[in-house]
Structures are given as structure tokens and as C-alpha cells.
Amino acid sequence: MSLVVDATIARGEFSLSVNLHVDAGETLGLVGRNGAGKSTLIQALAGLIPVKSGSISLGDDVWDSPARGCFVQPEDRHCAVMFQDIRLFPHMTCLDNVAFGLRSDGVRREEARDRAREQLTKVGADELIERRASGLSGGQAQRVALARALALEPRVLLLDEPLSAVDAASRPMLRDLVGEALESFKGAAIVVSHDEADIGVLTGVIHNLVC
Amino acid sequence: MTDLDISPVHREVAPHYTLVDRVFRRFVTAAALFSLAVLALIFIFLLQRGFVIFRDFGFSFITTSKWEMIDPADTATAVFGIGAMLVGSVITAAIAVLIAVPFAVATALFIEFYSPRLLRNPLTALLDLVAAIPSVIYGIWGYVVLLPLVTGWSATLNKYLDWIPIFSVRTPIFGRSPLMAGMLLAIMILPIITSVAREVYAQAPRDLIDATYALGATKWGGIKAVVLPFGRSGLVGGTMLGLGRALGETIAVYLTLNLVYEVNFKILASAGGNVASMIATKFGEASPYELKGLMAAGLVLFLVTLAVNAVASFIVNRSRGVV
Image (cartoon, rainbow over the protein chains, first blue to last red):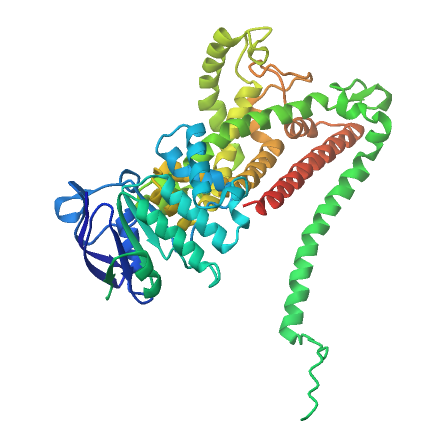
């Protein structure tokens, strides 16, 4: 199942034309300067904003196509986003943050918690399980956010600047972690970064976003 | 090599206030103190007028439920106690809050998240307009329109649920009951609670709501996970505002609740009252000594309302730090 994007996305004055193709099991790296529209594209893919024209589709499912009058709601796209500004739910524990997507998907509480615990252990954040998400350091929060996206076992994984909140010293470790996660991920993945070096390590295919 | 002296030097930061600053500061301070002074003066007035009653009756003034003065000229024949009225105030206000809060939350969520964008501003304006309707209008409407309806509902409730103590009655006379007054109060406090709830829900962090959608949550999932937890303290504050209004409501309760000096927990029975409506009822023909009793009753109500508001701001302040 491959993710195909051929669309124009507009947001106020800003407009962006994108033509992408990502196969399942493949990771596409997106680089672009600040303001190139990286995060806007992520939002359109996740279904948070509609495209202006063209279409987004995954395999045979058309997600968004104004011409054909279809728009699949975010919750039905089975795609998971790791946001640039992380956006953990500050009033929940890390465990509940990670279990959130599964609970939304209708998984029973106990099972969702078990799977969340497993996922947090995988990203090396098992000591954070009972912690509230509001008091985490940048690197810790990023691990939890990664676990939260992966726990959903989404069809499409969107990572927006997954290494943005860590200092230089812990960057290689987190980069390895994201790399491993992407390697074992079976769906289509897109990683966005302003840093070409990071992208080069994480993905094989790089698309330069210019607006 | 020159010797560099880099030891820190303490520097005075002396703010320089201009004349305008000083005048404005005095003005706002005076305004703030003025409202406190009014509050204090009301308290002193009520205390001074009602003091004799507290001296004569002590605690029994708020625990007993009898209000009579056989000979208006002889203070020895007077027995004053507002126990039943206090209980009535609490019961009717509690019924009002229990009914109003779920509706207020639902209305606020509808306006903020489900209503068409075009309707949002008109609905918000309408809400504030409804909040400004005088309580006597509510009272008359309640008496004419709501009372017959509630009488019917009460009979039905009593028929099927009279095994629950609060729904049983001694004599099947429904109508001007605590339930009736409570429901009317619920309608009266609904706008203010809704208005506050809508305002805090509108401030729930948009990016976190988007995050819930991006993780597969439905609109309701996002509301449950982000909007409701973030709005909780605001909702408590709004509810307390409503509770304060319900506790002190006079005319609407006067019109829809039978004044009976007897502690009544049976909310369908046609007996009860609250402190404010009792004061209104008795005020016109009260003898000087009885008037003192009413002042004392007013003081108790004043303190209860003050306590409710204090608890409210405590809860709001405490939960503000949590999220």
C-alpha cells in the first residue's frame, strides 16, 4: 500500500504544491527551510487541514480529494503523528499518553496499557511509565511521543522533526532509536527535518521541499 | 596586564512613577478597597441589627425550625429558628446545580465545538442575554408554565420511585415543592454556568486537541481527553457562581415553594422554603424584634454565600496549577 500525494495545500496566503510517493516499508525524508511548509504538509496528511486541490490517497483509499468530494476524517486514516512541538497530554501519565491512541481505537483499557508499557520499554522509557508528562525533559518527552505514535501500529507514520528537542549529546542515541523504529515499521513513513545530516542517516530517499 | 575588577556591583533598580502612574494607582486601589468596604459595612450592619437574636437564641437559631412570635409586643413569646429554611436553601440549590451542570456542559460544548460557525456568536450573545433576565420573570414563568408540568412529573416520580426516601410523600400533594423550586433555579443558573464553561472550553489548547485527532481520536475523544480536563477548574468556578445565585434567590422561590417551617428532605412534598424567600415573606409585617431576627437570618445567608464563594476560589486556584 503506497501513500500517494499530488496536491496543493493552502493555508491563508501560503500555498504549497507537493508530489510524493511512499511505498509501504519505505521511509521518505523531507527537508526544507523554515517556512517551506513541512508541518503544513504533515497536517494535511493527518487530516487536520484539507487540501485545496489534487488528492491524497493510501493504496485504494482516497483520503482527501476535493474534486471527488471525499475527505476521510483524521480518526479513520490510521496514521500517527509525532509533532515537532511534541504535544504530550500534560495531565496524563506517560503510560496513558501512549495508550491514548489505542483506547481511541477501541482497545480495552488493560490491553491498551499493556501494549503501551511494551512500547515505552522498546524506546527505553520504561522508567517514565508512571510519570506525568508535564515534567519531562525534551529527550524524555520525545521518546514518549515516539512510543505514542508507534503504539498505534499506524498505516502511515509521520515524524515532524523527531530530533528537535534534544541537545547535541543525546542526539545520536535518539537518532538510532528513531532509525530502528523506522526500519521495523511496515507502513509508509515520512520524516521531516531541517537537518539534512539527520535525514541522511534516517532515510534512503530524500525529497527537498521548496515553496 | 590590567587588573579587571569583575566583582558584581549591586545596582538599585528604582522604578520611577510618573504622576499619571501614581494617580491611576491610587484610583484602582481605592476602587478595590471600596467594594471590600461595602462588604464589610453590610456585615457590620447585619451583625449590629441581628446581634440580639444570636445572644437570645444562640446556636438554636440555626438548628431549630420554628418561627413565631405570639405577642408582637412581648419578646419572651418569640421563638426564632431558621434550620428548615437553611436546609431548604441547600436542598433547592443542590437540586438546581445537579440539574443545571450537565446541561450547561453540553450546551457549552455544543456552542464551542459542534454548532455551525455562523451560529456561534449569536448563540453566545443569546446566552448572555438570557443570563440578564430578571428573576421575577423566571418566577412568574415558573409559576404559570413550569409548575403544572412539574406537578405531573412529580406524581409520576412518586408513583414509581416512592421506595426511594426522597421521592416519598406523606400526602400526595405535589406542586410547590423543593423539586419545583430547584428546577426553576436550575433554569435560572444555567446561562451563567454555560457562559463560564464555554469561555474556558474555548481556551483549551488547540494543538493538543489536534494531537488527539492525529492519534485517531474522534471529536468526542478529543473533548474528553483535553477539553474537559483543561476546563475543569473553570467549570467549578462557574458552578459556584450559579450555586451562589441559587442560594440567595428570593422571588422565584417565593412563588414556587410553599413556606413551611419544617425540615423537609422529601423533595416532592409541597413544603419547604429558603432563607431569602422567608425574609421576603416576613419583612413587611415584622415587629421590631422579629425584624432583628430577619437581619440575623440575612447574616447567616450572607456568611453561607461568602463561604461558598471562598470554597469556589480555593478550588479554582488549587486546580489551576495541576494542568
